[in-house]
Length: 141
Image (tube, rainbow, N blue to C red; front, top):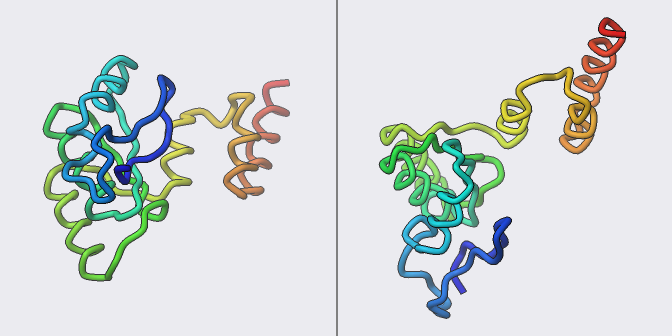
C-alpha cells in the first residue's frame, strides 16, 4: 500500500500498486486527483507520514495545477531535521502555504460566531477560543 492510506469522502485514497514503497505520490494517483477535482474545492490541506515526501510532493504538484495548497507541518512526520528543513524550503519556494494544523482549521472555520466553532475549538484543545465564541454569542443575543 501507498503512504496515502486513508479515506476520502468518495472512498479509499490508497494506491492500486500494492507495493510496500510507493513509486509516486498521491497527486499522481488518478483516483485521488479525480476525487479532489470532483469536490470543486480549490483550497487543499495536506499532511503525511513524511513531510518532505507524502505531504510536500502532492502539495507542490497541486499548487502547480492551480490549487491553493496548505501543509499542516505539525501533523506530518519526518525522518531527519535536514529532510524537514529542505522539504519546508521546497514547499515555500513552490508557493505552498505551511502552517500548523490548528491554525489551518481555525482559518477554514472563518467565523468564530458559527455554531460549530465551540466544537472545533474544543477538539483543538483551545478553551480560550471557546470563551471568545461565548462572548460573541452573548453580544448577538
